Image (spheres, rainbow, N blue to C red):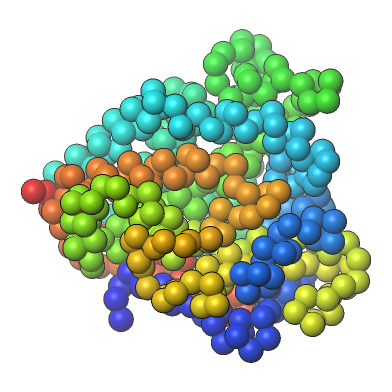
Length: 385
């Protein structure tokens, strides 16, 4: 089997009953697997809420490592709209020409660095660095801050052998507290300063609300972007003709980005808490239990996607849900899409081929399902023209 291939472990359950079940730290989850059900569940925030105990809608649950609510991620309408309206213009900045030029410069620089090496470990030496450096643009903070974030590793809440690491999480929380204090004392042009000087519904944001936005910004776009970038590089290593096609047909780059994000689904699923006894896929779920919206399964739904287990770079209809759906669609989607678009353009123009030297897969344990989400490590050689 191709090294870059991500199989669909949900297929049988999706076809036979439409849902799966997993235990998460003694807080079971019913997983919705069909696209129509995932979209319906994401849309129905009254029955399936995000504004539960902080950390509970994440799978694996983070209730044991944080008590700060991530905003606007863990807030439901109508309050959600007020927070979203405040921060959304900031997160749309990647569409600005000056932002795109800076991001292009960053990505060109790191690709050039990698072309000079005989071996590159893509996860830590390429994807993590690219993600962290790009984040300085999103936050509008000094470029040098990326080195601090790179030092945290690929996930801010997880460490080697531990799915959730409270001590590691505290490193992020303490860092954010310090940055907020600096912004309060000497406001600048960064996101922290934007938030500490902002109001929602006539009230100044509290320090905890600012912290909630910042935790989401750091955690939500870290391993997801890293997975998307790493998996894409593995794919192009095994499909150099696809990289050549993007070079020859740059007009398909946008569609190629959407297709790679659909196929690789960097985030497997996201939870909701059930507000009243109800049913999903003719399966009874109790109030205060949890469901999850399985983006990775929905993206392979053959009733919607033709040849769902293949990457079709110019796929015409692509209603994937890798960035979520409905009220809580991903706030950082514009930034992530811009990273991927510029990366594909840069690789197509600078890289002739990529050799995979060795790799270790990253397998996610979901009880009855095991899903490859990417790589623990993958060494490659970038070959220039």
